Image (cartoon, rainbow, N blue to C red):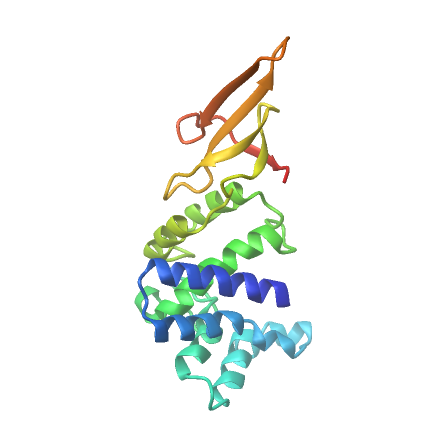
Length: 217
């Protein structure tokens, strides 16, 4: 839970920077993201979990609201980060514009980290697969505008990292596409029969049937 909170805080802050939020807004966003799941610290029974009024978002909101050092906006991040644009989220089923900007940002960051690190059926995904899942949620479970900023912000496969492609070839990421973080440029180096090396670059944004299968280092 601690590592998840740090990941969500980092991703949320990067999105906020991409959106040109001012220093005070970034501070509130970062604190809200770091504490978004604080309501999970109190354990409840399975029967209690069925009651929206006992959802961890409610408990987190009440806990943070009682702390004078935190603004009400920070408390609302904990309260609203499971609300969704389609009005089917928890705990109050708010619609798109009723959800605060900070909560929308944290929702995207939280979803991404859960898809990578969580324990559900859709967890443990490769980064580009997680992004494809998120793009399918645009306008329903995730805010479209926030998702665009997320895609411009996150470096799924950082330059310099070694990867294995679906062709079983290995290479190094040498370039990025802003807005297409899951489709970088990969340089593949093969040694020929002699001492010659065959070097080629595969732009995954153009070779759409190829994908990164594994991160090597």
